Image 1 (cartoon, rainbow, N blue to C red):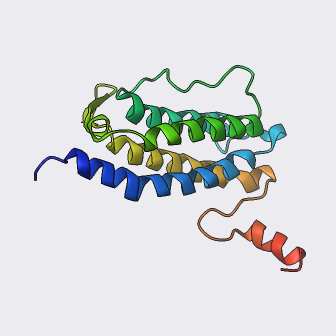
Image 2: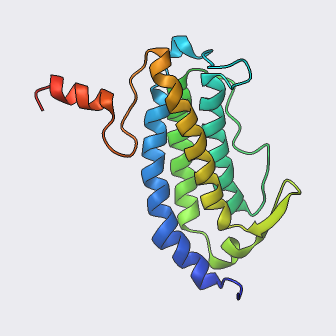
Length: 176
């Protein structure tokens, strides 16, 4: 198999990845802000992350992966949350703002930037563009984990890939 060209990398980003990223970020924000602030310590098992740990991890890691593509290096210290950001709703707002900035920068990356080889924690090296989907899959995985906590915490589960039970009940109650 031949190596990806810069034109192919740009095509992949512009015509496949950016649309999926934008759509998934809206879903992610809904899930993050659905976590009740008074239930942040919820965890289904002692070895599981707490709800707030997952909220923070999702928000930070997704932006870290985007910044990896933009900057051409995987930096474990990138995209850190400010100390003032505490509640799930504050994290969701930070996530939305940081994502918007990173999305705009990502959309302007060049083919050369997208092809730069990036080392992932000494485990593997891949072209920067591949970190878009690696990060997105990471987010989807943990977002699913977090969404399974919601009902147990007494929260409503938002629509993710189709209408959720809770959104359907709200629609019916509103006469829709």
